[in-house]
Length: 74
Image (cartoon, rainbow, N blue to C red; front, side, top):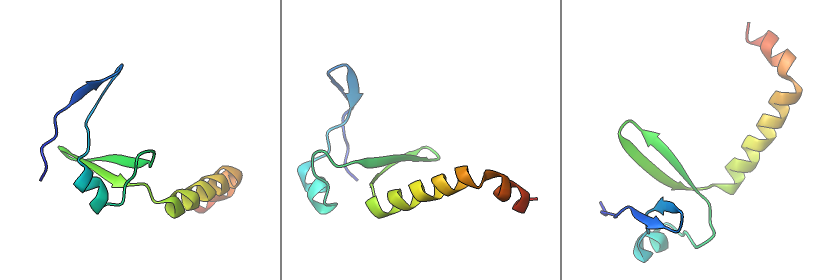
């Protein structure tokens, strides 16, 4: 476990991730990460581009086929 200090960064608040952690998880400046909550824990994961694209396609289909999906859910 790595302890990080919450800091003021410009007009925002954030944490700085250590270089060794970024290297181990293949995260570079400018990459997108996901923040999720599991109970009292905060979990940061790398954004999976393929998964993000699949979810966007799924959202598009769900918007277009809303009525059919609603009928199927009954």
